[in-house]
Image (cartoon, rainbow, N blue to C red):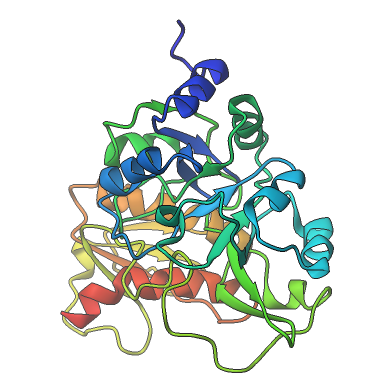
Length: 317
């Protein structure tokens, strides 16, 4: 059987309880049959992911919502009509069909319908909802190409190669409240976008981990990573550093520079950010990765969330 981007084979492997890496519009996911606890356990093992960090279930049709959730609020359909297929994950009360290992024992489950056609075809062809975190080692740089997956997870059973992802950062995650919605993780779909459908609940959100990406350190390269704000250490040797540049104003003195966008487009920054981090991580001439920050408005909130978490362990040290 042809192992080169064979959808039938990939779907068969999902049905057999194996792991398939596949593209979504955000990042590549490491997928397993969401209804098979043993298959889902393999995700945690291969990623070296802690069991307290829940997974997102990916669906291809709205009908799957009723099977996977205990109840479907009318507001869910309003959000789905506007944002699905797309980069929005909804945290909802789970049905008994969803294994506890998927939700880390929580009574809620994150669900989204990806915009990527390969992802939806895999779900439909396998006939299974697919649990899938990002296809990388836990806490490391997220994968936006199949090669990024191969680098970090060489033992995955199969990879569907869909080229470079078009969004580049993980989905926005929200939960519904009596007052409207809260954001648990920022993404390409912004608070302002969602406010066109529901009111924002500005009351204090929970500090417990109820969705992926809520740990303090995440998205990290193996090399030192720093955001070039006013707190940047003065002793950085720029001749050994690679810069993720946005405005072009900070490029002087760096060993290498990767421009995130030629016209200051935050969506382009998001698309190129993880790929640039992988490039510098693999570059023997680069010892330190420095990222130019952006204003924390709109998509900038999601970008800065990733950059702050990527540098967290290095700052802490």
